[in-house]
Image (cartoon, rainbow, N blue to C red):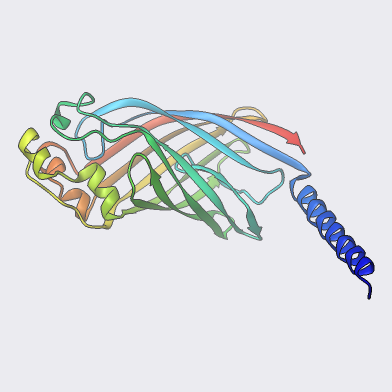
Length: 267
């Protein structure tokens, strides 16, 4: 084969491959999609391990294909996008906005280093063993706020009591790496000298176990509202922190409401 014919064959192959990739991308992105945005407002511990509470808020965002297999969603779900869907299994990237913390937020934090605002990014996976049960897990790595790894497992049973009202609830489990726990529960020697707390260096492990529940109302075709509550009991390296033992509490309560609006669009 001459160089001209070889070049032509290679060019044709490359063009065919490019066209196939472009068509695949267009086929993957094309179709009907939904975007839900909203917010949750709730009364929660003033900081991780606090014995006092404060009102705060957080965004709720989710993106996916219309008609995708999503039987259930929860306030606990962080911002996520399902790249993989097969039957009752969904998985993809997940992200969370992490708010900062400093000694101006509570007297108990006086003398402790600030925790910067930032984010956590990672992956999630969820599966429906039955029509009324969902198991979801998230593993996220901190950016700026901390450099550790944190994970959550949520199990929710759900039941529609009317076509527009659903009740749900189940256990929660959280774990964290040493770097994550050090940012929120650790007390260095310098911090101990400034704050009066005992010095503490945590190791990785389970951080909490708890239970949560919600009542969700499909207010309109696009608007969904919810009332929810949750209790967590700090464990191991979180519970043993001098910040929790001397100035906080291992019992963490949350009570709040949320609302979301769904946008439908086509690509």
